[in-house]
Image 1 (cartoon, rainbow, N blue to C red):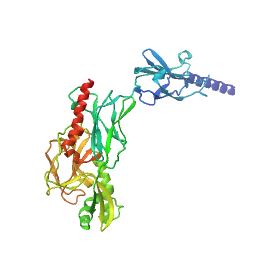
Image 2: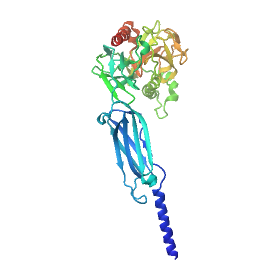
Image 3: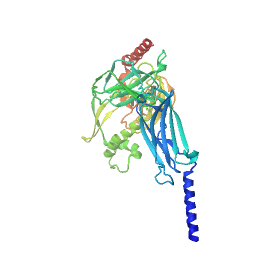
Length: 457
């Protein structure tokens, strides 16, 4: 009697459990691996469906545009008569959407995903979940048209590229030997309707040889990429060799300034500490400097040739190959990325041209420094200052005093270390002091591009 009751209870419990599973009332869950907004020519798609109750029964994935329906994926799952044994609780379906092969043209479409479970609900048809998402089919790469001509550069020099894009692109610019210089909208530079025009100042590292590759690139919001070649001519630059003698007097004077920056693991001898500063802190100072040249105003703030320190003599040239000697022994070699100008102690340092002050402060070997943004990725730098008289964000005019020369940082005497940069690349300031060079390589290109735009319109 007792045994029979236990059997009955077990049977009733089993039936109840089976009914609980098979009468599951919760619909499946649908999740996209990516927040899909665009579908390009060959778009990966991953959809995860799950049902922790009765298990999955069927999944259908379709793309609909203008009444045309294309099946992307469909799958039926085993549905056990009772219980969960053999049921599929979760599945990820992966496919590649190729709109052209599916006969779908570019434009707005709807991605439709439906999933049903193995529940006996809905008259044994199961619970259904649906997901609909509006997407934009975009299979065409952006069209790039280069407006500027005669891209002639010298190692260590700068250049300008002007181009149009057929659509708005979050990524675009110019690649110089694999180094990318972003472009910026340049409509404000031109008189005509030029909303599609972009401008990019570019640079060629002083250590680059002729034969490097250059092209304009663009990537639209859908991920379609385009590139077009850039006719150019590169001339190898010539730079000087220089010998810097490091004396004990200099080491005793300068090294204490950097003690807080030197790791405890560095050899305590002054020459070794100098080597660490000259190599490692130099690199860290460059990285810190370029933090302030990553973003630039989309405007040509400057006008005409750039000023140099009045009444000054050149103490060191751009990209001088320096050999550092201590007691007749070569202890280091570095290249000098700027021009040293000296006149008299604490001389007034003028802004080389109009611009916005992007940074003021101490930067390692450069000492107290001012960085001015002249627009479209062009910057001037003023280092070793003894006094800074401008503030970050301030707009300055050509000739405005931004500080006074000094000996801060790795300076052996009072002078101004003047630099020009295109984004993160040092370029030769001599070009920017030359009004004829600016006319030929910047202003004439803008004028020619303006004429080309008027012709195209």
